[in-house]
Image: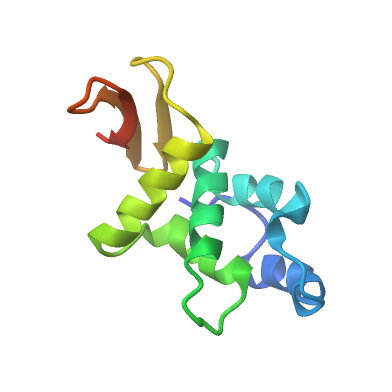
Length: 125
């Protein structure tokens, strides 16, 4: 649920020049703070992992980095491959250390569970 006073168009405009100059939205903390404002019920780790996943999977998409990331945060990932990419990125960036840990993504929840080899891994509840 987006309860921020900033709109997607405003956020995209804020980063347009930076992107046009070849910069990435991950270069500074502003994007994460603003995205967190737009998605207050989403764990900051999720926002960062979604951002990194979207940017890594830029399959020649013409829209801005900002628009692609915010759309992914709003809609989730479509298809198991994209979801697997996200979980792989999340597990790489934030290794699961405690089986009680949780990370909210708006109306979804990531939890830590033991995988088949007995290792802790993040997965969707």
